[in-house]
Length: 287
Ligand SMILES: [Zn+2]
Ligand SMILES: [Zn+2]
Image (tube, rainbow, N blue to C red; front, side, top):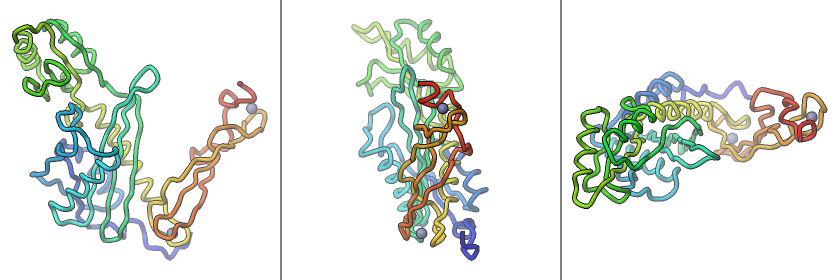
C-alpha cells in the first residue's frame, strides 16, 4: 500500500449523506457510518420507500434486492439534492429447515462516482405466519414470535389488503384486529404474520447493523495501485490446507477483489484469519 494515498475518512468527512428509509433504520446505521467515515447523516421526513415494495406485498418489489436498495438511495439523493445516498433492503427465504434474512446496504457517492455494497445473512429471524381461529390461538402464536417487541400483521388472507392491519404491538390491538376479522360473514379464520419492517423487528435490525458494518469493511478495503476505497468482491478461492493432513481442502484460502476505478485484481489471503482448517472440516480426514 502506497502511504501517500489520502485516508479513507478524508473522502467522506463532514459530507452530508441521506439514509433513505422511513422505518428508523438510521438508529443502527447512522452511528456506524458517522463514527467510521465521518459522515453527517440526514433522514428526510417525507420519503416513502414503500413505493419500492413492501413485505406484505400490497406493493410488489421491482427488480432485484440490489436494484431496490439502489432505487431507494437514488430517491434519497433526488429528494435532498445531496451527493451521497444510503439505503438498505432485506429479503427472507427458506434455508434448510429454517429461514434466512439477508440484508444489503448500499452507499452511492455521486461526487466520486462510487457505489459500495455491504451485506449480512442471518438465520436469526422470527419470520412466521399462522391461521388462527380464535384470539387464544393468536396469542399463542404471538408469544412464539417475540410479540410485543416484534410487531404483527393481521388480515383475512394473503390477498387481503382491505382489512389488513400492520404494526400491531399491543395485546388489545391484536385482540381487536383478530375479533374484527373473525366476525366477517362466512369467515372463521384470520391470518397472522410477523411484521418484518425494521422498526417493528429488533431481530432484523441487528442484521441491518451487521450489514452496515460489512459496508464499512468493504469501503476500507482499498486498491493497492490507486488507493480507491471499496475493492469489489469477485470470487472466493478454495484450497485452505488442513491442520492435520496438510492437504488442500474446499475451505476458502483467499478472496479475489477488483478495484472499481482502475480494475486491478488482487487476492486477500486467509480472509477469515486462519491459516489451516480444522480436520473436522477436511474432506480427506472427515469425508
Ligand atoms: Zn485433513
Ligand atoms: Zn485501483
